[in-house]
Length: 554
Image (cartoon, rainbow, N blue to C red):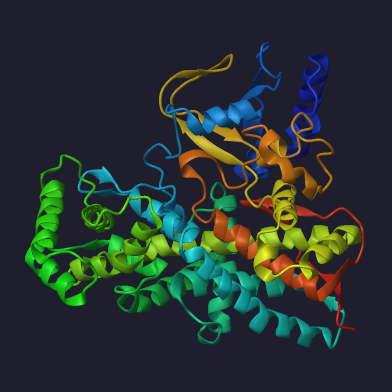
């Protein structure tokens, strides 16, 4: 039945698109295939037979495709212009309509998607803080940690394995590298302190989540199947580890520490106590009376404000900005940034010292970042190695760039960055996105009612010949002048306000892995057959990546 439905959809789309002289229909069909594959089990495919196509004659002739899943209306947008609107129109929201919650399916709230209520407002500000730490001052520190993990742990393991065979299951080593990187960056754990069981639990748990999402329609989640039991055991392992680490990170300058303090219900702030601490610690070069006046003003401002955003991060940020102002320092200057680095977490820790931690929200948020920061990066690195192993000329070009530059220059190299972006264009772990229409609207010529699900496909946009010359070829040079890129045609990390907070973290992690492998080994594919892929929840090679590796030292 499923094959018949896909054949029918493909035939109709091909007829419509060729009649209207719209090109790139293979990419469009690929998008539909991937989208339907993730959304429906085979036995339910007949619910997708009702569909319509809307093409704006004044636009770029890319259609909006209307279809139904059960009784829910859906549209698939297929142009870069559509994607831009999907991510910017206030009538289209990321949050699913009630009563759906990811927690009902996964066992924890996906904090980047789910909203949870606290004191009447949707708490969204911890995500901004994580983005600030991951893409700001912490990034260079994380890069050094990841480089050390690769050189001191991963490379020796690969070399040891290659003593017995040149055929290497490289995906196993990349999985370990990704998991150690998130443990080291988010939780400040060293490689030696992470057990093999803790390394394996993250990919295992994500694999089980992928299976649960795919089987939601056909398998009741209450049935204690072996997969469900394993999922519960692995999720408990992750949560128990995080609960154990919370007291240690409460007063630490770490990503996890930021998250812990964000979910701490701090007691009433005592300006006098904060003043005494600041004077004693000599962190602020101001008169004690000035320090006290600033603290009292900020506390009064937040206690009397109609806004309910009273997270300690923003209170402390305002205090530091006021300290900088009274010292004659501009708020966007390097000196102000250094003052924030020196004071932010210490002031937060002092305010939250006697506060009550919402442990479950801390655990749920950190679980989200651990899983999201490992599985998608593993898929991306596996695609990188698989594609590189089939292109020796590309390896040699990368090796020339790497061997003639310092490590810092390599990480900032436009060519290395161009390869990583090209890999994300073709081997994008996230292959489709969805949003929800919150009020009636017209999308081009397609009438869309509230409650409609809006889909877009990175798989399609990233290979559409309207936006990319030679779309199936890896051409790092095309990114040397990315200003000509059509907005909305490339979005592996999403777009707009909801862009992935770990974007720079993931890009840096992948660069370090590629540089480390190409610098030390020549990679050869075992065969040149098309790489089988899986489009279940994330887009990844269907089988573990196994290649031939030859040391460059021999």
